[in-house]
Length: 95
Image 1 (cartoon, rainbow, N blue to C red):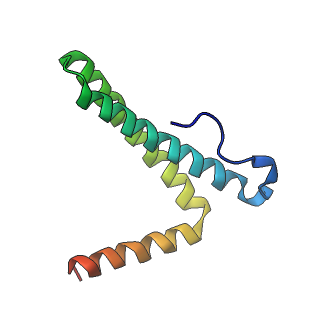
Image 2: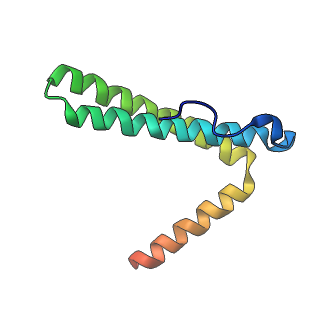
């Protein structure tokens, strides 16, 4: 889990700061998803498990929100994601 910002935004070029914020937010949400799902796996309390998994699901929605904005503001990210998708399809034989 993150204890503080992993970067100093004052050192980031202004034109890149929103993208850095979005990437940090994505990382924090992914970290939260992992935490809640791991705790759900650990507990034997069915009510706690249910709540933890529901919260993890909400965090996944947040990932979608931040990713949508990142893809809007970072066209290179869009290109790289498309290339990555093609590589996976090739590896899996899904041309």
